[in-house]
Image (cartoon, rainbow, N blue to C red):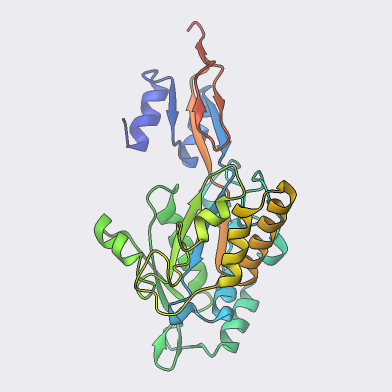
Length: 304
């Protein structure tokens, strides 16, 4: 196991390794320039996103969540930090996922609209540029998610975008213990990073249902810190996906769930996250299963 990105890519380029995982976007060019192949296998699940915890009063108002959705420039994130292997998200699910529906018209970057929504919600800019209401600043906190590619940089860029409409976002690293505990408390973490790969429509339920990953933190779910928030209409859609027997009905419910999540601005999709590998030109026959895991069953090594 080689956890350091620079050591992995160095081993590949030096001929000490034939195939490596988790190639960062900024390392892709130097690999291809030296004749190595980049494999970017789709994960076909919930996109790399930010999910809100509406039990927190700061994000309980739909207008605030909608404002932050429209204050997020996902295209800038992708073009600044990633390569063409990381498509901008156009829905809750990746475009290669079963049940995907294109909701890009609901995910527009519009700072004027964001400012108007915040004004309508009663949040007014203070002297430092950050909005406040009834003496409380619109200042949010999110923890970096280590498994997601360049997540700290993604969140820092989004923090810059949100500041332009008067919202402060603090990105925290934290030790594993405090991060885990705080992520169960909507008062401490009004939003969280969410992403999961699975080649089945049930992946939406897996991410958002209170008895599963519970990304939104609902009452009766994974945390006893939640006081009020629960969305039974969403939960009925999610349970319907897993209960439906007819394939077309499952896909329809999956589309309905995605629309509901975006219409309620529970989620801000950012980009489709692939599993990115790099291989030496003499490594042949590598294939990938449905969520991007490599299969070496048919792989072979050419003379080199």
